Amino acid sequence: MTDVFGLSHQEPSRNSRHEQVVFCADDRSGLYAIIAIYSTALGPGLGGTRFYPYPDEQAALADVLNLSRAMAYKNALAGLDHGGAKAVIIGDPATDKTEALLRAYGRFVQSLGGRYYTACDVGTYSEDMDIVGRECAYVTGRTLAHGGAGDSSILTAYGVFQGMRAAAAHRYGDPSLRGKRVGVEGVGKVGHRLVEHLLEDGAEVVICDVNDQAVERVRHRHPEVDSLPDAAALATADIDVYAPCALGGALTDDTVATLRATIVCGGANNQLAHPGVEKQLADRGILYAPDYVVNSGGVIQVADEIAGFNMERAKARAAQIFATTQKIFAIADDEGVPPAVAADRLAERRMSEVGRLRAIWLGR
Ligand SMILES: NC(=O)c1ccc[n+]([C@@H]2O[C@H](COP(=O)([O-])OP(=O)(O)OC[C@H]3O[C@@H](n4cnc5c(N)ncnc54)[C@H](O)[C@@H]3O)[C@@H](O)[C@H]2O)c1
Image (cartoon, rainbow, N blue to C red; front, side, top):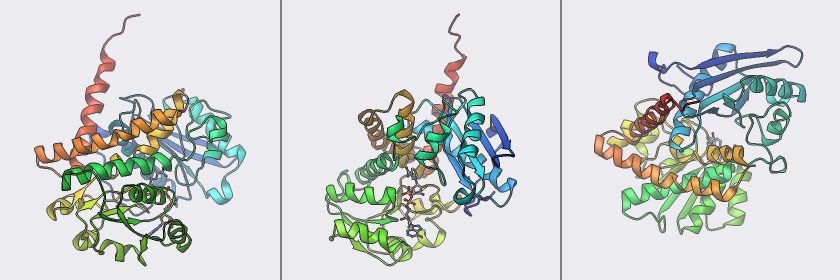
């Protein structure tokens, strides 16, 4: 199965069927959305709303099924009391997004009675969630002015940095990145914040971005940061750590074959271009910190909103990404599997062991 971004995913097995998939249509506003709840074993499903011009309903359905399943694993390892869910709105956000459409969508989310909490994703922003929130109590990722958690890239970048420290501790015996050369691919919302953490820790940083202005913004603030013309040049550069922070699919067969870094740890989702790349990385002795583990700071940030947002509390929880990443490397070593497989196993264990407790009768 391939999603709209050209990334392949394993077909869900029979025992990994989704709990609930809901189609939502409101012709007057033009809303056509699909909400997929993969699992509520750990609590209400939490995941963003992707607003995207899918070529057809099948492509949208395939995407939302993959994304909601991935959220279950991400939320489980983030230590959240949330299951996995996601929504897609079919359309072009630049032309189709209206107040009426977003509010109609909010009413459908509300109709699920709290089984699904929504948030921002590709094509949706905090301001959109404020509008959805006018019809719906189950929304996160709103603006600070509306009691929301604001820009989730703050804790996403912080969490990636914690995951990288854990990888450094595992590989070099010291969590510090001081003196290490780190290549950051993509210096947008997450990448540029990661650069700040790295410089503060004493790392040497080299960056690339297809957007020259993004590169200039970083180099203006930090002239000591080097830049390379493109992602191919960065991946083959003499770096210790490679941090993909742009789009998915950065780790292709070709990239892995030429990579000189010994650690891969970045914020981008779906870094492995296809199943099997995790083994190629392990075979080349490259330590891969699984993307959905290290980039979970963003969902941790927005989940905190549900109890009334507190940045210090959310940051403390995102700091745990260091320990979780270490645990995954330890399981990978013990069980003789790549870290990506170890992460999946740990997530499945938590969903099973903690989810099972719902069977204990609480009395009346
Ligand atoms: N923002 C979050 O909280 C969050 C949370 C989890 C995961 N992620 C993931 O992290 C990644 C980055 O997210 P973001 O919010 O920083 O997005 P963004 O759009 O702000 O930044 C992405 C940057 O990558 C650059 N880019 C695109 N293609 C490139 C290429 N081929 N080579 C080099 N640079 C390229 C873009 O120009 C842009 O500057 C995405 O994969 C996203 O799904 C983000």
